[in-house]
Length: 207
Image 1 (cartoon, one colour):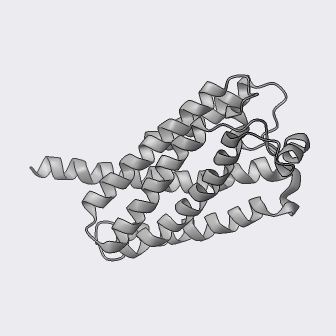
Image 2 (cartoon, helix red, strand yellow):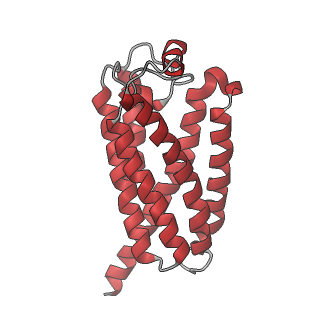
Image 3 (cartoon, one colour):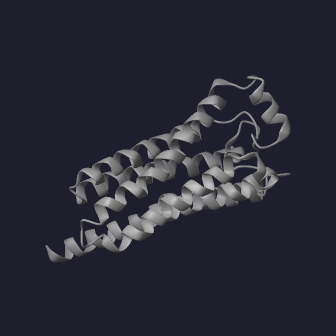
C-alpha cells in the first residue's frame, strides 16, 4: 500500500523541486535522470514502489492458491524488481525532450539509459497483464470476487493508455498521459494491498 503512495509523493516533490520541468510533456523518469536536480527523491520513490510491489506479489501468492494467482504474482514480482532497477539505472536526460530523444535515436546515450528504457517497457507490460491474470483467480474466490471486474477494467484501460503514450500523436502531452497510465496501475496495487491487509487482520482476529 505504501509503495504507490511513496512513488506519487516522490514525483510530486521532485517536480516542485525541479526547475524548468513540464509535467505535461516530460515523463516521471526525468526526475531521476543524471541531470535532475534532486534525483534521489525519485530514485527513492522507484525503489520503495518496487519493494512494495514485490511484497504484494508474495502476499497474494501465499493467499490465493490458484495457478493464475501464481502467474499473476510472478508478473508482479518481475514488475517490482524492474521498478527498483529502473530507479537505479537512470536516464542520462529527459527522454521526452527533443535534444535527449535525438541522442537516444543516434545511440549516444549510456548503457544505463538504455537499460532504464527497456526495463520500463517490461514493467508496463507486466503491470498490464497482472490484473487480467489475477481477474481469473479472483473469480474463483468469494473473498476476492468483487475485485474481478475492477482488475479487468484496470488491465484494459492500462493497455489503451500505454498505446496512447507510445504513439507519436500524444506529442507534448506524453508526461500527463504517462501519469494517468501509471496512476491507474498503481492504484490497483494499492487497492489490492489494502484488501490483502484487511484479510490478514481478519485472520489474525480469528486466531
